[in-house]
Picture 1 (tube, rainbow, N blue to C red):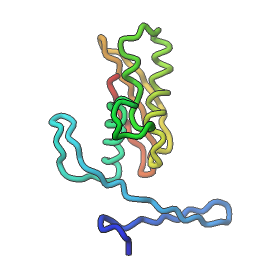
Picture 2 (cartoon, rainbow, N blue to C red):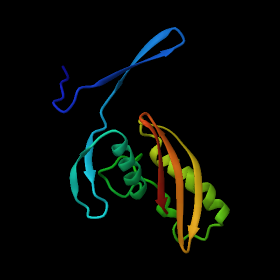
Picture 3 (tube, helix red, strand yellow):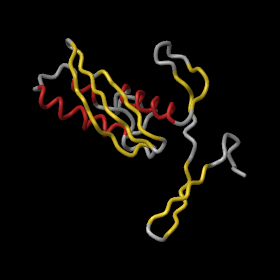
Length: 141
């Protein structure tokens, strides 16, 4: 019986060589945030919670809000309005995205970046390998 009234812990067994390791995986249940209206509309878990985390972490400027730790948020906003060559931006955007979200233990890898420009806007599309599977995300920088 779990001490938390919210949910039981999930236990997964993995084998490495001849030793068996038991890893406790905590639920990722969180509120469902509507980015268009700013309203909270229920709860989500699993892949939907990870997708929301990625979107929210990339849209929150790092170090701006005291409620968040120094690990939370991104520094993508720092690229806006800078006189930086396109080649440097194409190299920095993947690094900043990976840095912003890879500290979460549900995220295993961030890869397959594609950078595109439409007018003054810069879009980055990438894949996020998670403990629950792979998701594709797009962010406007």
